[in-house]
Length: 302
Image (cartoon, rainbow, N blue to C red; front, side, top):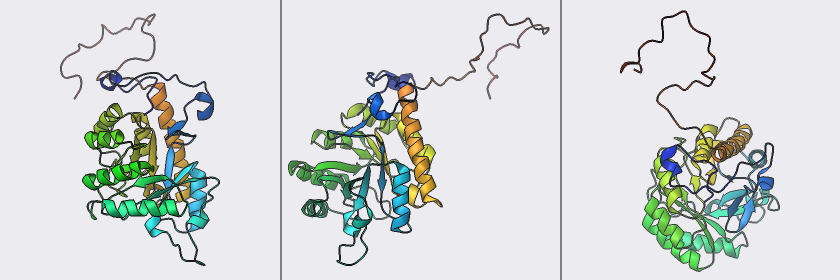
């Protein structure tokens, strides 16, 4: 996990290591040494985008381009593999994007492992997004089955990126067994509720030594910015872009939000204060005709 130049308000500052410096104005991520590093590979973009739910392949292609993403997820169990039929895989420029096959739709470790092996046999990628669902209504991950599948896949040499609850202990166990990152949900898949528990995310970032990627629940650009301001290493989303009224414009907004949130995190936000703190110097103020300032009492703030 990447660490900040100046952290969140004081509570988090003491527990997050500080070793980065803010880049010069106008510097790119690559030039400033702030690339997103995942399993030894470097990426300029910290936005990972899904390929489902678009109106057609043309809209998907334009949205992917507008997002600036370099990694795109593909639900392998939903890919049309019949000869002569339009295929999602043929609509993705693999010279431009790294495929991240995912195990969406799997409800057991066995099914997820089989799906990842199929992706490898098809020559798609050894990078896999592990997703084992425990409940069809909430689409929350099955932690026990996810841990079981991850253990096998890591041993077989896969680069495993597991979708998991925002449970610091589950994330720690996945990191300890060799997963390349952990991907805690911000809210239920496709809900658009935004980050429901930023405090757990902060604990996860303090606990694991691998990248933390927020996965699921982002609804709009401000949600993505908040995830990055918290210090998360990247954000993965699909519905928030594909389900927008203008998917291409939303993809651009998400790219800018991720970039802005990352810059804000590295810059280090000011602390929150209960009372005002004037931005103008207090020395040299002209005397007032009033007898003085009103007394300060316990009822100044409602």
